[in-house]
Length: 402
Ligand code: C5P
Image 1 (cartoon, helix red, strand yellow):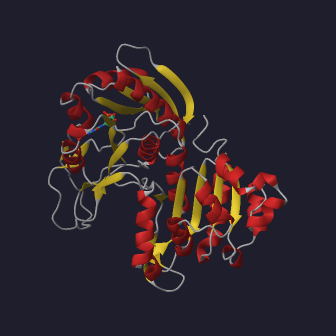
Image 2 (cartoon, helix red, strand yellow):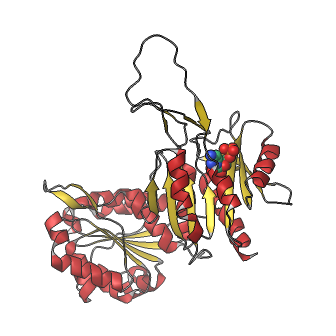
Image 3 (cartoon, protein in one colour):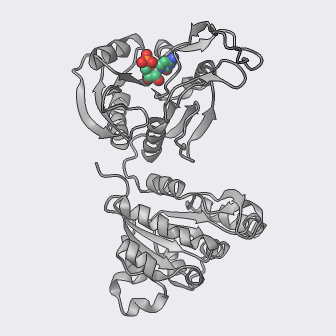
């Protein structure tokens, strides 16, 4: 299934920052995702990186000077400004932010930024004091007010030794933000989506817990797809490895009871609820206040069932609200999934096999079916979690209309 980058032309503007070398990775990830990347290096960027690397990665000529246009009409700035689907400036220096904010057009990149009507995404990278300077902050405000988008910066130790905001945010976050801007399908615009994701940890004592192997990849993929389609996204996430999109509101929880409470206080205002978390079925009745000692004797734990969050939402659903759940089963998948669809009053359940070669836990692809009340299961075969999320939201968009 084509993703948001497929067949898209992206101008990658690289400006003068020590992080310029990271733009090679950004270019390569964009190309991998199917984009046609036009690299542009400002004069100061060329002090850090050369055009040859970008040409090798993108297969395109790297633009380094405004007046090249006289020799090559393909890269004439007005033609590119019209053709491009996105301008991504990464890393974006304080200088390019200032020029873009004030309409200064003194090189290829700044001139073309004035000429384009494509979305513009800046990933700033600079010294903390430069970033925090009122002039830079005011320029960012001007650009935001004009509709430009920003990814980062991240905080951390900078090349200059200072600690604070100013680091180029990681490539995956830049790609996420670019994907949201490029996506043309905005059928969830104005909709609010609440997703549970990850595992839950049920404490035994202050240092030990009962948990599971949920990676959080499904929740992450769902959040990204909902954002791309224009939704406002909140993720209530238990412990999990997969990073959540920066544009989503993230509520961190540990136990099933915390997750239920976080959902209960938010679900009234949402249009779509998706239960993608692997919630622990049981919790320890009375977690020990101090660490269990290794005595060599056997240890008895009494477990109580945890509340079923998806079922609670099913019982309290408003008319028009859509709820989606997952059934991960080792055997008799479709029968179990059908029973859960009814028991939890869901509008859609995604059945995926966790037996044998196709274990969904931690995997990038799953063997899946979609089940809706009163209809035969729809097989999706072996499908990536990204493609699966597209199919889920195609269905959700239909359910919201019905
Ligand atoms: O019953 P089972 O755990 O297999 O159901 C799976 C579905 O129910 C998933 O969507 C899961 O997120 C949700 N669930 C829940 N709260 C629980 C258990 C499961 O929301 N306590």
